[in-house]
Amino acid sequence: MTTYQKQKNYYPCTYHRYGVVLLLLVLTIFWSCANHPESLPEWSNHPPSDPDYWYGLGIGKTRDDARQRAIHEISSQISVTISSTLSAIKTEYNFNVNEFTRQVLETRVNSSLNNIELVNSHQSERSFYLLARLSKQKYYDEIDQKKNNAIQQAVKYLERAEGEFTIQSFRYLDNALNEIEPFQDYPLMVEYPEKSGSVIMLRSYLFEMVINFSERLVCTFSKPEITIHYGIPDPQKFFVDCVDKVTGATMEGIPLVFSSPENEFTEKVLTNPQGFSEVIINQILNKETNQYFRGEVNFKENLTYFPHRFNSIISTPLRVNVIGTKVYFTGSEYNVGIWRENSIIESVLKEIFYQELMVQATYESDSDIIAQYSVETKQRSSQPESISGQLIYQAYAEMTLTLTDMETGDEIFQNTINNVKGISFTAFEDAGMDALKNLKKKMSNEEIIDVSRFSY
View 1 (tube, rainbow, N blue to C red):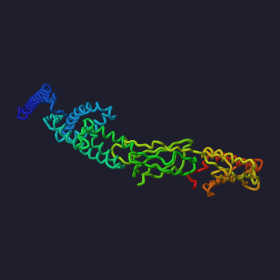
View 2: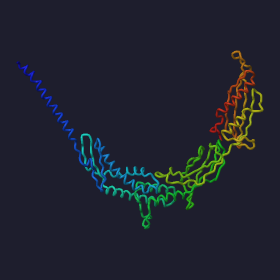
View 3: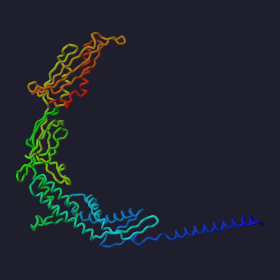
View 4: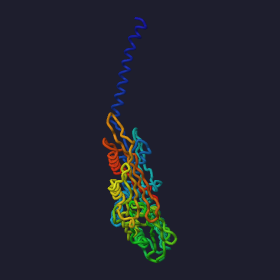
């Protein structure tokens, strides 16, 4: 047997032995892993319990993810503490405990991040494990320091608010409330005034001041009522006066806001140094005959934090008596040169004016506006036209409407409708009547009175 033949017979056996060894090695490793799971530290399953600390266990794919989860777990424990304290005062101050807890918790945990300690960590093949804790003593010490600073600042704002009574007084109160807002879960006791020996509940005292200041600012309309025409521009001016109910002093710089649904008016004003401001109702577009014009101090315009806590309305609203405009209708109507005594168009005009402007038709001497109309129809041609062997009579109608202010004699509005076609198979007069009927339909379907174009 040659050397080549010996090697040829030898190598297959060698390869077989190596394959068996390799398979046994893989099976041994697999069996070892399957029967010996990765060991985790005790604290990863049973975090410590200590009355002096809040512990948080975080597990994540990254170290930062685990850290955030640990902080979240600490936050959840603080949240329970805050919520249980707040539940006792929820009814008294009527606020949303869950919303407040969320806002305050975020602020407090963020400010305590530097005090959170990393106790232990572990990294497995797939996850990071991190154990963190926050000292309750450090947490409460920091809260106490911030709380005391807030009380001191709030008292400074309160002292300024109780000085000269101006619009700035409300801003000071608003700022004071904002200072103590994060500490609603704490009783805020303070000696006030300083060195008086009198101790007040700061939160309750500020809420009382909000009510007192809101009632102390009194604003009134200069008139109990006004009468105004519906639909047309009819500017009515009046004033709002604001005073200090305690001293009678006028109040400058008071922002006021008004409401009058669907109507056009001055929405916002600011009182002048004499404590009053002019208000104008320009146009009434609400058809209610008895309306009320209301106003209040616009704290949203003036305060940054809690404008909803302040409420100072004008207690007696302005009564608005809405009346229809008195209109005298006059004009002429001609059909192909023949005057018509019984006008088709005037009745339509009166109906449209009533629907649009609540108009009352009246005599000229008693009117506010004169509505002058001119209606005529004209033949299209001097002779009928032959179309497909049929004689057709055609005419076109035209109307011009002019409104004049009775008091000044000035023209305030004009509108023209023309080229309204009418046809007949019998006569031009009949074609003209057909044109007038079509004009009537067109007037009913289109807006012939555009109040926005009225010129006063």
